[in-house]
Length: 62
Figure 1 (cartoon, rainbow, N blue to C red):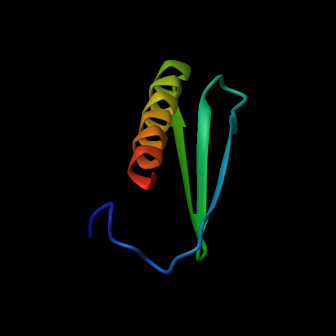
Figure 2 (tube, helix red, strand yellow):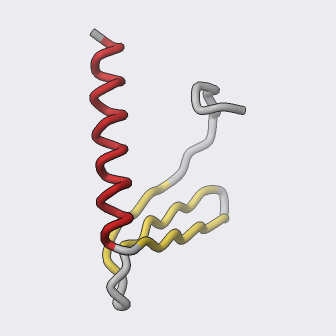
């Protein structure tokens, strides 16, 4: 499956700082929990990728 394949799965995403100075993306779905910790600089890189993807999606939608 690729990024363009749709799935009928619901998941919850929480994002926040940890007590150890990391940024955590916490994904929970169907009883599975996936905590993903990133250094602040890595988190900023991910945020930039999300912004770029949003801009590309917006351009394709118009």
